[in-house]
Image (cartoon, rainbow, N blue to C red; front, top):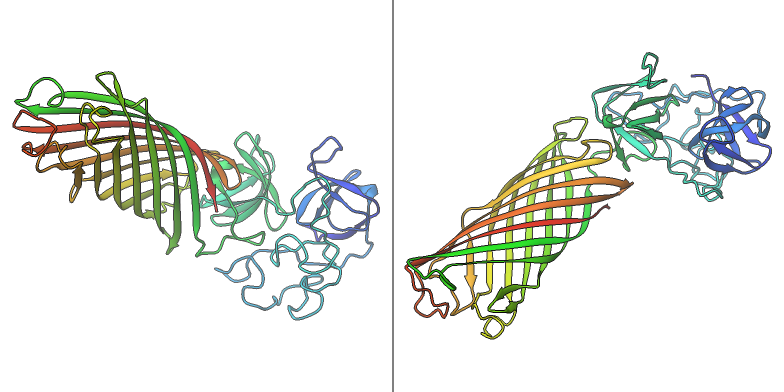
Length: 469
């Protein structure tokens, strides 16, 4: 690619996405603002200004006759080093012209002088001068942002095509970890620009959107990720209690069910560990209110359920373009099944006890965050198989020695709405069994058989939003 030329706007004008005044406007250029002229096409100039690249009418830009030669290369000079300049604190020996400025000198971007590069600060900052140069980040009257959207290459090696239909002319080749500037999205394809200024098309599934690494290169290791979620939904409650040798009626044998409104909130925290692993934690709470409640003898008994789950998670990055990661989970589950006015026989004629159920959980999950450019999936299974404890309301116990097991099967999908935000939908099947053992003589439940057991099956569906912090 030829060296960029310095130019100055002779009048206020607009930076267009493509040649032609009907193209989308990226931002407005002020009179006297410096630009980098990258190429010419008829009466249009392709320029870079304030970290954005687009097209402007040639009559609005005065190009300097003798531009200072400048090496615009932004690739690493030493293998393994980020393309972001300044990591080692010194200038490169092969920098010439406009780039040949010592870090301690007065021509850099940290000072208050004019930026001779016209605001092309990739590799030294976030899309503009740090000092008082000509770049005016607040001067975009058209609402355009000076922070360009970026994507990170996830595939091992990707070709950028000048024409996505023909795919016979390769503009450039990029590799896993490279960060590119996203110019446009169209039908599963991204038009991107490299740090060298090469533009081309690639499949959206070959990259992921990123906020890391600024505009100067691949994201740096050690970045933590926090995800918050809030969801609303409905839960269908089902319970069947059986008593060996008991009467075929309440309280020995019966089936109960109700629907419940659910509010779910939670969060995830992730840290990279080495090159291939992520370690993190999850905390979630779900509150459910039965509507209308459990019905017996014409009375609706109110039920409120509180579920709290805490998990430690380890994930292995398979280095696939879709981001697939298997996960192992170790957690603790706490559940409070609360009956309204539990001791009042008028409000609770079936004498159903409140319960606390808790214990350690083991689980596994598989996450595919980029099944398509917009859609991600996750499935998971957790189980509580040992050291469980179920405690019922005193004097309303179903048995003397309850032993429980529980399983949670979940599936979820995300749809990327905008940067850092996504719509999310989840389904969860809860299946638990409890053997209560022989009845207690002090219990008012009134079981007449030799032992009771219960099976609970709940179905929950929620939708909401995820927020990346």
